[in-house]
Length: 640
Image (tube, rainbow, N blue to C red; front, side, top):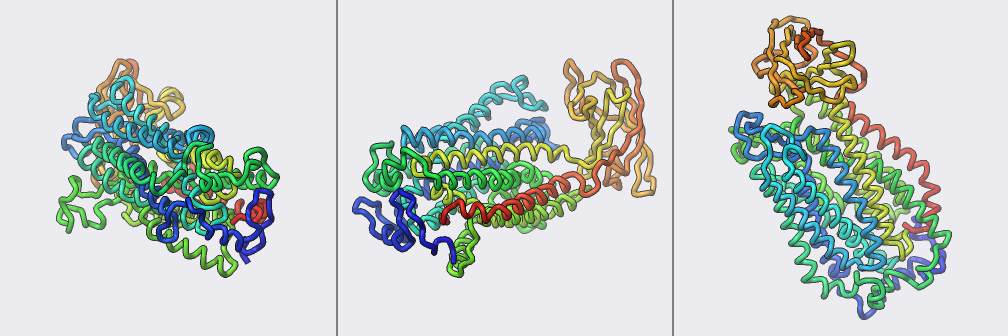
């Protein structure tokens, strides 16, 4: 028998003693209750569509953020054509770090927003304030286009202050607006139902599908506009989505939501009863309340942080993998001469389209999982909430096995097939469906009524920590090569790191300080590399290669140099096949040193090693959570 089939003790708040009484209470709707549609309050569909448009705006911008930041600023793009759609020219590590900070901030501000809604504003007014600020943020991002940047230079406060400040201002506005909007819309869904209404979980599942309908459409619309036409068009379409959601909400709210969401003290009898069962609930917490809050805390940190830190690679490292390491011709479908050749300017579909796989899979599989939980419940085998979290972590780890294989396939001149990302996103989605909608419902049911918005904000705070870690992990992924190829000068004082891009046959050289991380600008004459090339053990030939500065040298010099694409023979597909001596003059002193190939890991190399970590860690967290499940289940006191 499941927990919901056992009698539930009265916890002194007037809750029904068992499920039969809860069902009867749910059926006896007061006369002022909002109308129903398909067995649910019609207000659910108002919130469904409002949140759909808000998520359209959010995920549209999220799909573009890292891609925009790493897009080059040079007048000529890599394919030799005019760069008509420049970005910020940041490195993948820099873009991922900002992505993580932004995503974390988006989930921190709901803590304050939830408190303000609980105490002063009400969820309705807080949603309106947040929605308009979010729309202003997207418009501000689009206005970055009107500020000039320096060609060939990464956009910073020094090289493009107008564009930099405008872009950052847009991100800040979205962060602030989301703080007001995000916790309140979920709480309003919970306020549509009596506390033990059996329709509550399915209502949240329907609401969750609305979130993902918007998330599915946005990369296809905003992503295509941003990558193919202009980044500002993509950001502008996100603003249109938010405005559409606001207009819909304000038109239909009075009829279908009634007094739900009004400031404290102004609710109708029904809304007040759904928010607080009696005055004593506002005054003190029982021991049962405290234990249930502990369950929220454990699942928030052990479940959320380990799950979402890996999951949010979707917008950063996996987004970059889609752009740079994946064959996006779709098995030749979009390639020149293919069935859909010529549809896109570079014969590949936009990398941001992969961001639609996860929400599409949710729309496809959410009804299946919803049916599965009901089917298991009828047989007394429905997993408890903590165990569902653990299952989600297991599936997450398995999903990244596909990324390990894809990363291994992308080594050298080859690209990973488009199916590896598809497999990873689908299996990650299965894990998400075990965790995320169940988590939202759990917070509203385990939280004391007077702390619901605050605890929803706390739930999002744990996701903020997750997103910050996700950004740091993604930045780390760009540095997690299991081998380095260096030239050492002046007894560890100066290093030159050699890189080789086999797809573009491009040899590059970057001077770094003794920490082997910080770029070291050097006023130097053109470096020369006396190289020997091999194909396995067979020597192909020897050449003396001249490397030129990647960008104009400033007063301090330049740290990165590149060779022409013809400098390296076409047969060479791995930097391990390159050896030789680098000659350079630094501060008037001629220096010469030999290229050394260093290896310091042995399991998986580069991105494959990074994604292997994302296999092991979530599965380990799932094992811990499985062990804790019996204890957490008792502390929930029959709430399922």
